[in-house]
Image 1: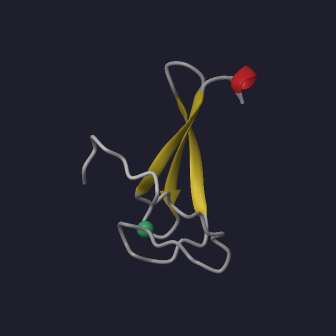
Image 2 (image 1 turned 120 degrees about the horizontal axis):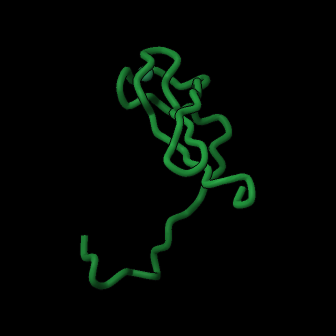
Length: 69
Ligand SMILES: [Zn+2]
């Protein structure tokens, strides 16, 4: 991947995800739902998302505050 020169003729195409079930990278089961757990962050609230099948973490979303959405 040439990071110095981006090929702007090939922008990614965004396809609606309807009907496509994402797979958990840990257990490779179809993710039918995710659990979230609120965790304390240094500033604002953070939510830890995890797979309902294997309970491994899928990612963290961070809300910096109510005024920033
Ligand atoms: Zn899983």
